[in-house]
Length: 111
Image (cartoon, rainbow, N blue to C red; front, side, top):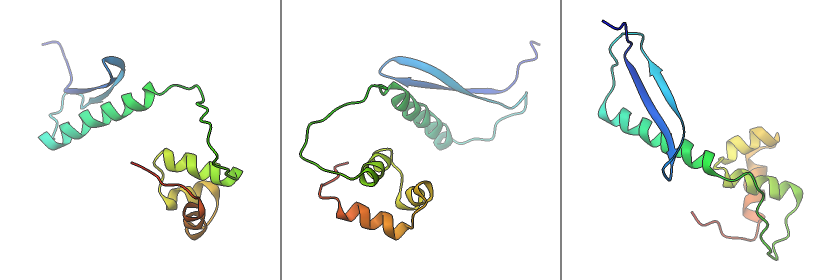
């Protein structure tokens, strides 16, 4: 009657703040999806909301940790969730070199 499409909206939210939404539109065709897939889409919206809620301000932490520029870059990539293979691609190094950098840094990562 209204010529509407089959649409799924996934809110992008964090702590009651709405950043937007993802829209999946099948142009009137029925979606083929499972409850698990919808749950995954909901989780993606929450992860994106968490990411977007981060402040752009740099945080200064006073520590005795002395890192080289390369070690700092690798540490930042680790904090963003990159694995050794992706870091190696981004920094144009081998995975073995990345592994050596990570293991040589004298600190413990806590997840």
